[in-house]
Amino acid sequence: MNGENTALLLIDLQKEGGTSDVVGMETIIKKTASLIEICRQKKIPIIYTRHLNRGDAIGLGNREPLNEKGEPLYYHTGTEAIEIMEEVKPEPGDIIVDKYRYSGFHESSLDLLLKGLNVKHLLIGGVLTDVCVISTAMDAYYRDYQVNLVKDICGTTTEGSHMAATLMMANWIYDIQVFDANQLCNKLLGEEYRVWASEGPDELQFTPETLRDAYAKLTVT
Image (cartoon, rainbow, N blue to C red; front, side, top):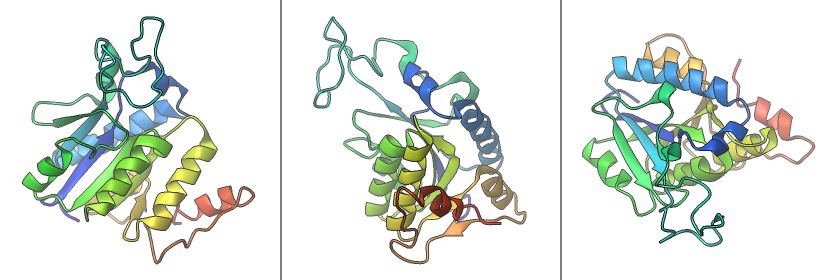
């Protein structure tokens, strides 16, 4: 991984009211802002996805929740909810990819842009871990990008769902590396760092009773 073939991919860090239900969202945003700053220093491209639902309800996913007017409740294109949060907002030169389904790759320009940038390695964070993050990370793997999941700048509505989705990615993306944000910052700055790297399929098998213990193995000490 180096700045010439790496990009930071931030999933759906939007003003959408639903993100207020994400566990630890304030901390996620603070850590994301710190990582963005270092990526800017290192000239690593920063790419944001935005999830959109057309206000006229054309092209919505099956059973997308609607209001009394028949308009989407979430990520409505006629509202400010779709914009990136101020604390991590894009700067000129950053890339915004709009999407209409969970995965950032589904019928979007993301793959084309990454190939144009000669990106081989993706640093991935955002929300929701168990929906758009896991969908995008899996699709990245299917397209032969090497995935680096920054697990503490990801989040969802429950801690258990976040842990389970993270472990699914760790188990089934065979060349994944899982970072905490501060350790990834250390790596990018050329300092000593720690990372969890997959050694084989399904190595972090977990049950409801062992979920927390399995997740703890992703933090290398």
